[in-house]
Length: 623
Image (cartoon, rainbow, N blue to C red):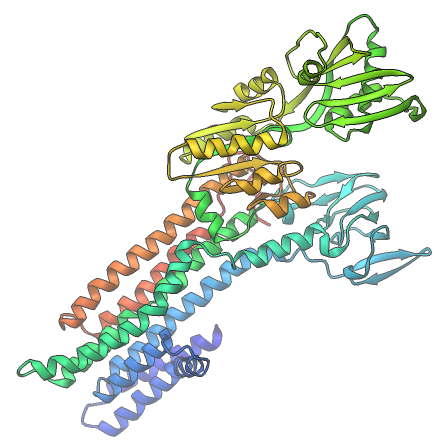
């Protein structure tokens, strides 16, 4: 940047000096103009030759060199120098914009750890994170970045997760807690047992997502790339025709006059404002989201998300915390303790949060010898043989499929229990709604989302209670995993609009639906491989409001890209016509190219600005 400023300044000083020299001193004046051109335009000439050598003949540098050299040939020395100096100024703005945009994403990229402190035979040594294997113990001192995902085996501390999630509030970790790579240990010494290799770690997946995001171009970016490929040679051909044909067919027309017009035509026709500003807008939008803990896998998903008019949600883990607690036990013919025990033993094979809540309520060790058989019935519940008794524990569909009369309950997620085909009671389990979930639907409506839908496997009463509390428009309850895909397809086929459909899930069992939607959004999915693979957008923290923030940023990014495309084309077309008619001179043509490029690049800066959600603190989203 300093070198560029020095070259431009030297060229400007020499240009002023050349203009001061009286016109009768032709040779000294020409030499100073030439020195000004060399000082300001040598880099442009070098870049043009590099492009030609590599087969990129019709690039913006080539257009500038042709225009400047042509101006020298017809003795329009000031215009020749103006062309290269203004173009260099525009390039400086472009380089600054790209650097600023890349830095916004580079903050996310800085999460990569440099080393891991491996513990072997009571000794510690620093190794490359790639060398650490699953099951190894590593030490993480205060101030160090956690190099790999793992479980804390000893120590307690607070960790800074802002680089991963955008959340500024430190998170407490204690023994047996999971800890993710990329976090910074703020205090205390932690010993961590590694659960994933570096290639499969959270930090590695995030880096891969960010690095590959720019490769997935939106339709607008693809259009601009294709447009520039054909546009530049057509413009050069048009300029040649403008320089040659009018003097041959119009009486009194001079070659010098029309060559000057053709050179001005070349200068203003340079497509760099579009070629630079449109991808920069999308890159800025991706960086703005990354600052806030939202990973978008490419510009194409920004474009698709900006068109979303229907958002479909999973319930558990997405709108609710997924932390279940036993609310009420209603036995029939047995005691509460007996009912809970039978449910716990039956659900012992399940890792579902409901089973976890039952075990937590039971609070005692499970004697596995009492269980002689256990099987899970997908979408229904479990069947187990406990001390010779057949125990069924699950939802109402399980009771109905087995022909067991039962008393329906409401008020949460219900686990019905039957022993030897006799209904023995129900256990009501509630799941707490996330704090900012109630603000989500109004925030989405403000962004133009016309309809919100919830798909869940929960029973109708429980699902409708949560939907009514949050403000969801429609509910599809009692769905099996394959039923969610069918329900989503029905929504997509029946909505009758050109907009897209986004599906939001917690990424654990929603991978098929995430992949089927126009835009799949995984919530709080840092630890879920399925979510990162299947989703197009990953909300790294657990805030539902960041869904609305992602939609807002995508819409803003698309608006900026459209403004740059339409504005640049209108200004260029107008000045091209004026140059062809010799109404404006080359100085205006230079503004038409460089000026428009600078304005478009400055406009693209707006995409870099993070869109804070309503519940963020002032410093959140700034890593």
